[in-house]
Length: 322
Image (cartoon, rainbow, N blue to C red; front, side, top):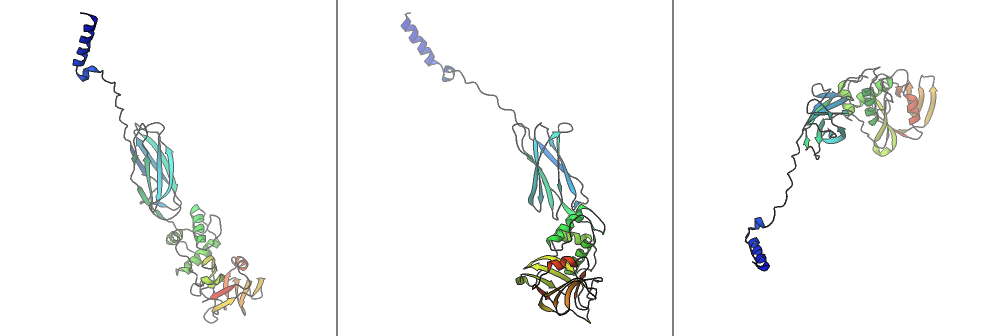
């Protein structure tokens, strides 16, 4: 057989082979190993009957199974259904095949709190999110002489409504007088007692004074039925004080007047830092300020409050007594 014939026979043999045999099969990559799906769980601590006390730190602990080194979990806290804050925390090696993590939040206001944890999918571990676990807030009674973060927060919450009780974290005399003013404005028993209901309302921003003459600019209002002095700029009160006005036999004159004369210190009548607004009627400090109308017609304030009030009032400023 000559060379040409042999070549033709070889070519014919190749053409006669099936297509699958004519070309060698391509190499295939092995399928990647499946990424494990984790289970994330959380527990909320320091709750009593499903509630945390205002200004408590609420701890949250959790687990991720299986544990993979270098993973993180995002812990998100909610208040009244809205995101409050999120913390990204590392997962540490825990018991068995699980990892553990922790976070916390300080309860600073009233409402419904909740928390959930989320593990985002990575190259080595899948995603998982817990259901939200929720709790409510409880409020304690506060007492004279008590010092705490709750008292500090209570003062701040009062100040937002113009019951300016000063700084610090202790229940002092000034705070007691502002509690009395709050109670008077809201037609409650006239005392300096800060029971749990009062504390809850204040932290909730409830119980502010509604200005009767918002168009009058910076002015003073004395609602006789409330027995308070309110200093306000337009419709925004900035200071509220408990007072005692004229008793039935010597009532306080009502109407719209302006401040026209100051008298610092004590006078012969025991009036302290007087600011006059009509004839002998004045806003002044006095040794006795009962929780009811008892003056000779003036607006009596506590001695401790009056120097501050004296500085906050101005010549020509309006006062409305009604």
